[in-house]
Image (cartoon, rainbow, N blue to C red):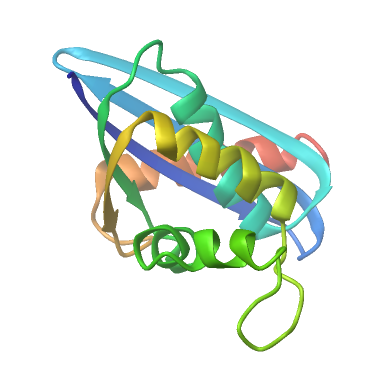
Length: 145
């Protein structure tokens, strides 16, 4: 199984507001950048969309080292929260509806295809790949302002 390293980030100007996302996929000497955005979205939706787009770009099941500065994404996957929300009909433990079930459905399905290892990275710090994802996400969000 190939090991692919993925960095992702999402950005939103206003929450909700114009948003963008960026992702970098790396395998050996290969590096691919992906990005996109939406006119009216939230930061968390862009964080999720970045991971979904990156995993969707993989052509076969891979071992994935996933790096994100989103505690929402990393914790919900690593700690099993998203699977729990799904099992309870998208209701959280506090009995409130889970947000973004449409995106979580897609992400959980992709997570079943790949072997994911999760890494939280401090945002806007000294990680060049996280910073590049942020640059792409912000640039995409500006297209809608």
